[in-house]
Length: 145
Image 1 (cartoon, rainbow, N blue to C red):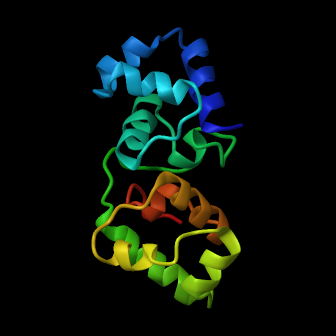
Image 2 (image 1 turned 45 degrees about the vertical axis):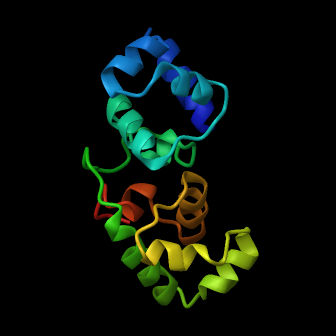
Image 3 (image 1 turned 60 degrees about the horizontal axis):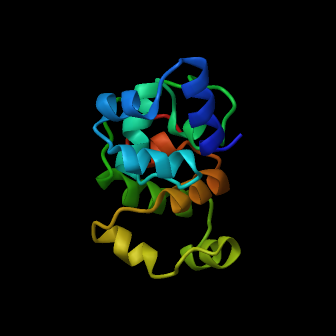
């Protein structure tokens, strides 16, 4: 399933509307309508939605089939991302250049991430799947890979 499918299913199964989610998450209705049409959220909105739906980011983004397959925090610390990403590269003996070339990531993104830029959700999904770790781990929402 995809993010879009998981969001739609949640809304149907829990009989909630965009306006209900908007009030609970403080995400504007118009943005949620874009998500309901297939747009991918940024990390802040993804965490708010995952908290609201009580699920992992991997489930929310359609990587995992189960909503609660690990423990997660309701907050995240994106500052952990750069170090965790670098450690995964080292542990797996993969150069950032190779990962970018294989998966179509922007090569300069590594420099930007090291200097505080937030990765896109698309990049996080690619990295999580490549290294078989959770997005929650990458963004500091969980300490378990």
